[in-house]
Length: 77
Image (cartoon, rainbow, N blue to C red; front, side):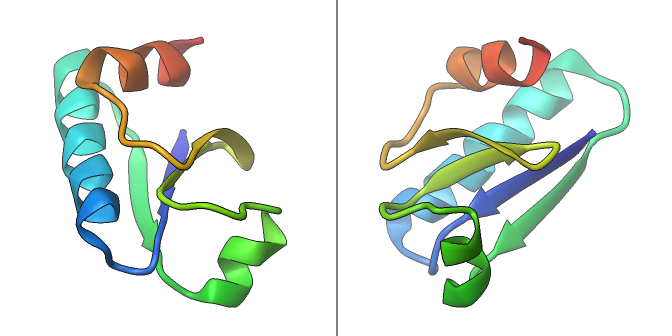
């Protein structure tokens, strides 16, 4: 599974990245986590507000910091 965190480096983006790492550690298995900071790549997903969470190419959330449990639900869901 490929998980991407879209964001330009703001504190909310960094927080979502850390929360996502915690969620992946909790559920186990192999998941690739990639931080995407390039604004053109972010726009290619149609995301207008960051941070955003992308799972296997599908935008699952944008514009807010999620909890660990919310990220787990989106990854497994």
